[in-house]
Length: 402
Ligand SMILES: C=C(O[C@H]1C=CC=C(C(=O)O)[C@@H]1O)C(=O)O
Image 1 (cartoon, rainbow, N blue to C red):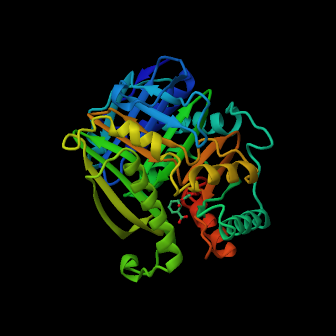
Image 2: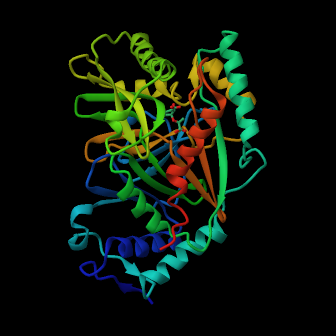
Image 3: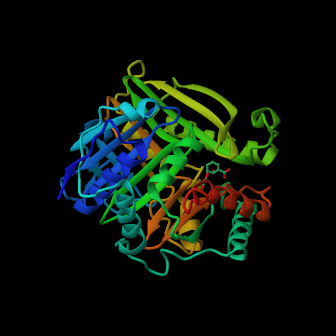
């Protein structure tokens, strides 16, 4: 028997537990996210029951959530969740929120959480094949980096971003709602996201990288690259960058400027690079802004989306050669990792992020993905350590003991 949940007495965690359990039971597709430095948790539910694929002409789309894999599909289409229901929760006032009532089948939040846990430990439909969940050993990854360095020395490539897949078991401590809450608390300046499409997969992440953003007349993108561990009380002050990292990030900036050049867009603002924090890591970032009205480029969002993806922060340069190198030499399927995800035309804004620092939740396991930017000065051992740190950003929030 269903009862109405009293939204005035329920905590955020318990509200989400009931909501997620009901959505899973009903087989709905949904996405939940919090933008960097925002106080709102945004929730979008697609109750159409259909997996939709669309061309990413974002200016023409109805409000929704877009999901595009790393590899371009033959038809260049992305998955799209339609916002048949959308609302947001003010995280600063989460206990007295006017959130929609839920009719729940569960007597307690614990019961709802048990359903969620058993759904993901036993029931996910995501199909496996040997390429999809091929776990990369340290030796294999280091070999891949060495091959990348060789291709750069032989001038076939300028930069390459090899990635790895790491599989961790989910155990009796896996509590999805607690994991999401933990990501929200730990990474205030990341794009925290969770999305579930029963036919496609379930992912959880904390991305530091905007691919494109449009709001009103403003267009924004960034070049993010170069990684080091954040250290000490004031990590920004302690950061020192080597020539390798400076060059690695400059190549991403150059890639963006080359895209602007291709469409003869000359009036853009470039700020940076500056050091930014992403979880326990630091990166170098430059910001790029364009006034779409002043430059007469109302479709700049879609145009740049097509030109930028996959950027040289996740693929390499030149783009096609780097893509072919990865396709040939990486032994696993990147799937949605290093693709793009995000809300489209929600409250007049589109914010699409690169799907990084992310995990795919599959039957009883999480697949963690991470890549590292390789230039001729790369140290393969260090690149491996970097991917380990990147995997930990999500990995450490999955099997949380109380
Ligand atoms: C490819 C990833 O990060 C990119 C974004 C920032 C810094 C990066 C780097 O230092 O290699 C990568 O280019 C990843 O997180 O898996």
